[in-house]
Length: 107
Image (cartoon, rainbow, N blue to C red; front, side):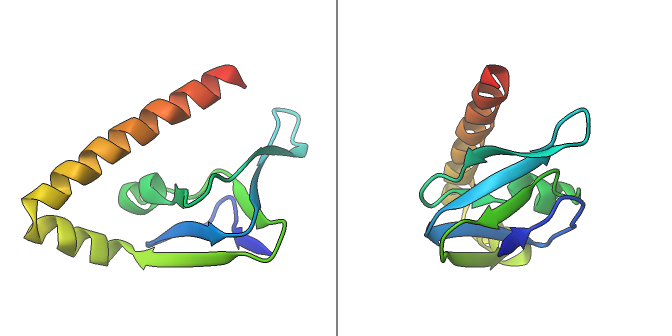
């Protein structure tokens, strides 16, 4: 089952709660290949949802998965209502972006 596809626009964040999913992406030659497995409770779609950009990868469930979806608007409402939540989210995003750079560097 495909959870989301490359080129898809979204207003949702996806969290893989249970099960195993893998990110697939196209190589420079156009061959689609597995990139990495999802992490437990990993959140996908933050950059795409808030940046209004399409996904660059496919996320495919390899086993039966429980995937939670959170609407971008719900996150925006929470952040506007609570400055402490905003601070924690910004810290988490910064750490997540840092990890993405490490993973990309090591590919």
